[in-house]
Image 1 (cartoon, rainbow, N blue to C red):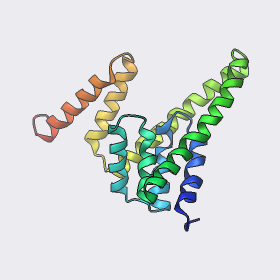
Image 2: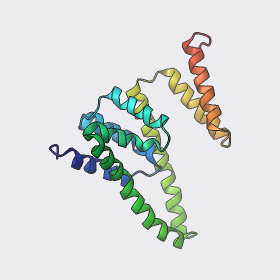
Image 3: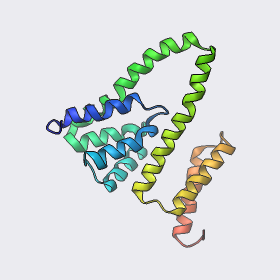
Image 4: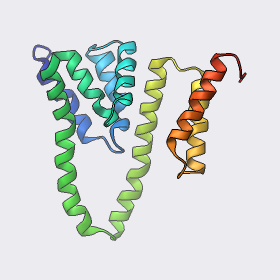
Length: 181
């Protein structure tokens, strides 16, 4: 498998595609483990850098996979990794959505929806922990993330951009010595 990097990208990212309950962030921890610890495609620092680029660029944050594919095998790696992550889950979602609406309102349907919600949230939280750990986030970063989550839980209609701006200002003020935490 290591002889053909394109096949390795498929083998790694197709399973992530099929278990990405909660969206792209729910699989970041697994992607980080595979790309840094298992296959050593990138270092932990490079992973954080690629993660930051993927989050800053327009489009879904899971485009991180495209950047990893590019690091592994150039343009063909970027295309293969992207397709391996997005095509299987898209086909699965299409098939499930056709059946899902047919059974809406049944008890098992509601129970399944309610049961998958905490799984998706837990996977997203695991991704956050993995990124924070690899980035070497300190107490200030954890505090800002926690307060931001609480604010958005308390006021869900508040623009996330305002919360992001508040976190950035707080971080900059602490780093500049204007605010002590």
